[in-house]
Length: 103
Image 1 (tube, rainbow, N blue to C red):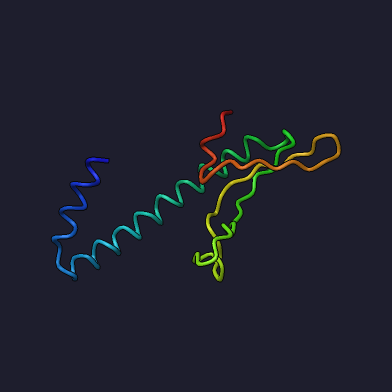
Image 2: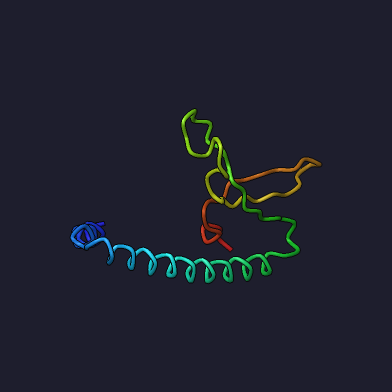
């Protein structure tokens, strides 16, 4: 976390025009990383096919009265695993990333 603090100290010194450039660059970097994560997710799901578990991403509402999710899309998306056990559908929270699942 120390390195983030140092980066923050430098960022707050930037003029507005450079902040906009940084913002655009970060958005592009996030888009690229999300595509990479999506490819990894697809590969993981293909690997898990046939084991009786379905993985889904869902948005959730936290229930806090003044939270942005009340009128918006919700928090997330978060990964959940679904499977059938003794005739009942079971659901388990995985997290923001499927990498938390040990294969």
